Structure formats: C-alpha cells, structure tokens
Amino acid sequence: MLASLSSLVTRRMTPARLGAAYRTSPPWLAKRIALSNFRRTVRWAGIHSKFYRERFAELGINPSSVQKPSDLGDFFTTPQDLIERGPDFLCRKPSIVFESSGTSGKNKRIYFDQAELKEIGVSTAAGFGMMGIGPEDRVANAFDFSIWIPGLMTHYGLMASNCFCLAFGKVDPLEVYRRLQLHQFTVVLGEPTWLIRLTEIAEKDGCKHPLKLLIGGAEEMPAGAFPWMNRVWHGAKVKMCYGSVEQGHAIGFQPCDESGGYHLDTLDFLPELVDVDPDGWGELIFTTLRRNVMPLIRYRTRDVTRVMHERCGCGIYAPRIARIRGRRDELVVASGGNLYPMMFENILRPVPGLTHDWQVVFRLREIREILEIHIETVRPDHEQVRTEIFAQATYQYPDLMKNLALGIFEMAVVFHEPATIRTARKLKRMIDVRHHAALTEPAAAVGLAMENA
Ligand SMILES: [Zn+2]
Image (cartoon, rainbow, N blue to C red; front, side, top):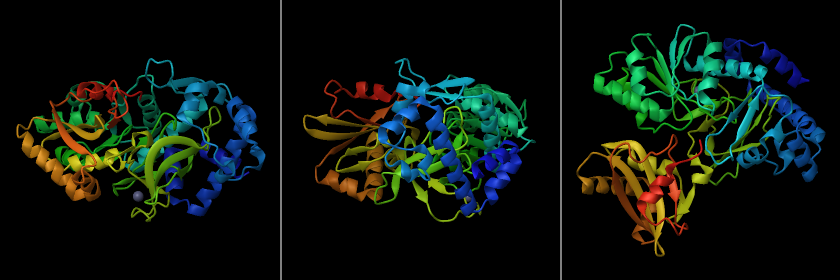
C-alpha cells in the first residue's frame, strides 16, 4: 500500500521536490517506505522473472512471506548472475540495454524501459540539484557515451535538470578546455582521471575560465586531487557521485560540503552492508526499489565501504557511507595482512612529484613475497623517492612495516614514465600474480591493468 502510494507520488515528482523529500524525510518514514517497496519488488520479481522464480524455488523462499532483507537469508545476486543469465532477470519488455565492455562475450547486461529512464533522469537531476547544479548552470558532460552507461544516464539527468549542456562524451580534455569560455560552462562532469588531465591543462594555461563545480564518478578520485583541483579552478567545488551501471544512476552523492563520504539514495535503493569486519568495513549490497523491468535484489557490488554513523553536519538524515576503500576482489591478503588500494593511495599521496596513476603488484621470487609499488614520476632522485615512500608507509601503517622488518616480505619501488602504467579506462590498482606461474616479469604484470569496466 505504502509502496504503491509512494511510487504514485515519486512518479509525479520534479527533481526539486524529490530533492526536498530526500532532505526532509525523517528516518522512520524513509525506512518504512523502503521496506514497503522492498516487499513489492520481491513479490514482483518472484512472479515475473524466470531467474528469481527459479532461484526462490530452489531455496524454498516464498516471496509473499518476505518482509525484510534478512528474510532472504543468504540469497544474493552477483555480477556473475548478470553475465550468465541477464535476460532471465527480465520482468517486462525493455526498451534499452547497456552492456559492459570487453570482447569475451561474457558481459553484464542491464535493461530498462522508457519510464525507468525518465525516472532515472529525475532522480539524477534531484541529486545534481542537491550537489549544486541548477537551471542557470551550463554543463559540459564528458562522461563516456560508449556501450556502458554513464554518459547517457547523466544526459537524462541534465535534461531533467533543465540546465544548458553539451554532451561531449569522453573526448580529449583539451577539446573541452578550449570550449569552456565559448559556452561559458560553469560545471564539468567526467571520470576522475579525465578531470585530473583537464585540470593539468588548466594549471599549465593559468586557468583562464574559473568553474563553479566539477563532479566526478565511475571510480574514486585520489584524495590528494581535491585541494589541488579546487585551487587550480579558483575555488571550484569538487564533488563525487558513486554509481554503477547496475544501479542505473548514482546510489551515493555529496549534497553537502562534508567531504569524505557519500549520502545514500534510499528512495531508489535499499542498501545493506555484508561480511562486515571488526572495524566496520564490509561489502555494499543493494536492492532496487523502483525498477520493474530488471529489479536487482541484494546485488553484490564488490565495493568495500563502511557506514558513517555520525549524523552529517548538513542535517540530512539519509545514511552515509565512507569513500569506497576498494573492490572486494581487489583485497589482497598478503604481506601478513589484508591490503586494500586505499592504503597505498594514502602512502603515495604525500610524496611530491608522482602522478595519480600507480599500481601495486604482489609476486613471488621463488617462495619470497615481493610487494612492488609501481609509480610514475619525472623526478630523477629515485633513491630519495623510495625513502619518502618507505617513511610514509612506516608512519601510516606500522603493522605492515613491522612485517617488512620481520622479513615476511620485501618491498620494492618500480619507476615508470608518466602516462605509461594505465593501459585501459580503469586502472586495476592491485595485482596479485603470486600464484600465476607464467607471469614472472614485471612488464607482464603491469599489462594486466586491463579490466572490463
Ligand atoms: Zn551531508
């Protein structure tokens, strides 16, 4: 009842009203609406989707009796399910499909219909509105428009925002930089690494056209890049969205200036954290609450984060999560501990003269474990760079370095020219080849940086 009422209301929402509802809904109401929509989604999927019908039957789950996520026990959906059985998820006729890149034939597929695309546009515009984009803004959208999703979904959001925009796609940042003044852009959207290259161009040129806001997404921005970008763009705000094609749009965004985490969109998603470690870090999973074509129930994102329990200074009740610490499958148990990409980002950030692209490779020399930190720099004083990296590691992660001192592993720094480590759109930060017998040469390991979106 609450579900159908809320869907009736949200369907008629403008981005501004949806944003206001998001900002002001008390937690008890948001939770009741989310659970009501959760029950509706489970029943709907249990009736209309071959995949859910079969899986629920196998596990003895009666969709009508499911009241809350824990009633589904250890039922989850995974990226592998989308690869193997994508079309079986369908509950009704789709109008569009998005597919992950990669030529293996094993791609994730996500389907939507026109009504959902429209809703995604309104939700995205509501998020953009809270992050500072208004009808008066002029927006350069440099998210990728390839078969994967971000450019197009962002475009729907910008159309619903009623601002002015140019759908660049992921072009050479110089092309966008040259047009900033021409179109009087106030906001630029793109992947973090792309925004970093754009900012490098602006810095060299003395930044003749200040911006109001830059918004990144699709992967995490190195923390050290925020203050630098803010300075180069003469005080522009730099914010992030956290989303994926499976979510269709951003589940996490930054409506306030409190950096360091994301507010979650609990009108469209029911988020949970599973496999939580003693420090509170776990894998984010979510259930879509308003999808009818291809609902995802308890979908495992593989992204590791933790809930930020303190109430945010901006006053919004919606739960917050920390920056994504890494991909669950990028966690490497090595060198006597659990290692995540963010640890190495923290170690490298204070070291001057490095680019934002780096990669850590774990390999074996006979039975000895080697932790190789691959970095890009033009600094000629390699020995000094090495000393600074070791000093940061010792200062920030004494346990890790204690294991190094104990001789549990060896640590090496490998130097590269700028713009040579990244070989694909996304850079895999941690590569474990300890048990890949064929891959003993450093060059082969770095070549593994390719990853299917
Ligand atoms: Zn906040």
